[in-house]
Image (tube, rainbow, N blue to C red; front, side):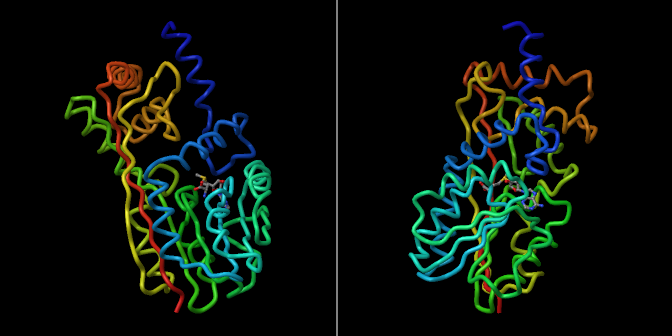
Length: 288
Ligand SMILES: C[S@@+](CC[C@H](N)C(=O)[O-])C[C@H]1O[C@@H](n2cnc3c(N)ncnc32)[C@H](O)[C@@H]1O
């Protein structure tokens, strides 16, 4: 494929300027939905969700809320612990996401309701859930504190609140060049238009919202094989083009070096000499 054709293809596939802040306004929303299916298969996601399930200890008859539930598969897996008498409510800003979530809910045993809403202003009354969770939602909000306060508000006393999120400042790329790795690491320390590094703050956020007995864990996702001629990014990850955009925006990469930056990663990946790592964090606390 010629460079020009490749650049054209990348531009088309990578046109997600709003990201998960505005799925329904995205002309390529299907790509965002497919990325959610891919991130659900990450080893790190599987490990964190399994840890969360053990920490939440959901019981038959309980009510669980998932805010920013996306395709709903994580909440539906947890709903198996709610039994026939329990209820799962999923809230998301995107109707497109919820349509998929509703179709995923076909085999659920408990009552399930997926509804459009805003994490920052939930419709539910105070103390109306036994447990509430938000996974990789806070990073898309301008003010994650607001959403955490809402999660805590709608949980009863003694109920549990769970947060899982990525910390993009932990993202590393190894192409066998320390200066290149430092460029990426330094560039991603700056949050850009969103709380992209919120993962490391989850413990502090739950504590500030009044939760106690906060348990914490983390899991690192590693990619060692990826064919850049097949896909603009490793499964569920952002593309190297959008990474280059971010580094240009924070002044770590000259706009003229953008193509060099992307091709350095792609060439290393073709030689199987590229690895990437990203750490996600999980916390579960109790409302006193
Ligand atoms: C990265 S996806 C994560 C989906 C799901 N929690 C998961 O981990 O697979 C972020 C989700 O947050 C939703 N979202 C973004 N802003 C929101 C808001 N203000 N209120 C509710 N949901 C929001 C998006 O529509 C999207 O489904």
